[in-house]
Image (cartoon, rainbow, N blue to C red; front, side, top):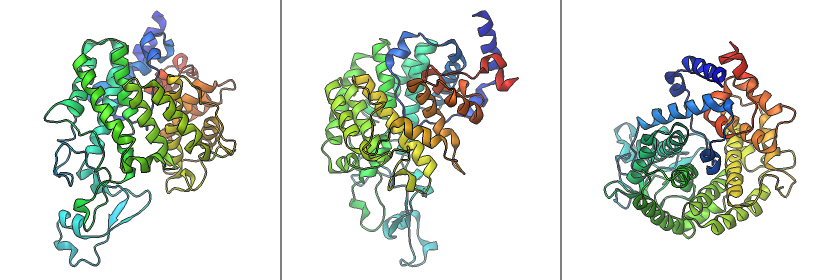
Length: 424
């Protein structure tokens, strides 16, 4: 153990805080069994990954807090600062018929120019209203700070989680109304009165990370996670679940055949777990695996058209939906049923989808989006021939230093500890 500790310290000396901060990436989604975190029966080879978690937690903590009321310069059509607002990301203005565009202010463009979709092409001005980015940062921050509390033991990480959740969901001046009525609004003439679109439900897909953080603090009996915050969040969540299961906007997302539908079930099931509706979460996940999932993967593992394979960024969308499928399977395991080997109507499985995607060249897309799913595959299905570990070692030599390596166990480190950092 002394020898291992020396290796860990030497690796950390090279793998500096600045290096890790520069390499931070937000995983599409995930859920870790809380008992794995709290039992602390961790493989010694995860030590550097644990340190990475703490450093990512510190990096994210420096950016908070976040609020739906402070991350947008414009209000939703309701004129209520507590209403979440985002603009549909793939819609672009065509101002050719509205006069001299050089004289139009951005606000005039948004109100007078018709908007048209371009699949996979983000309109950069959507971040002018950044409730979406704020929630994404919040979800990562509470996720890693909860893990840092469990691995590091410092109460400040638990305090961070409780404080940020209180700010986003509960505090009188900064709380979010429990709906997404104005998420991914399509701008254009008459849009001032428009509601959001069903695709906007995807904006809060990472509720699974928030729930994971709460479950860790709750089960770990962190003093900073008070009864008042827990009760308030449960009440907020029950109201939001009501919206998710009854609003026409949300129900449109529930039937989306691609990643949107998969992530909807991530979100709903996780929230049902938060409010201790285990039977409801079980039913939600059973519904996903008996409906949408059946059409998502063919026998070869391809994620069938007209879904992810046909999109403008196919490597990303395959990896994206795969992360949602894996998260649904993790949530299913938490509530008592095994979905890992369920087959689709065409004979596909989650494992087949993973194995297929590993063979797809990423092209210009970030290859690393798939890596944590490969780790999940090794941990769940085993890696008897070493194929998953070999893929990771070829693709990212220091993968055992990545946070996801901590919770995707068992998984070989490909001899990384024995060789030292980057084989040196």
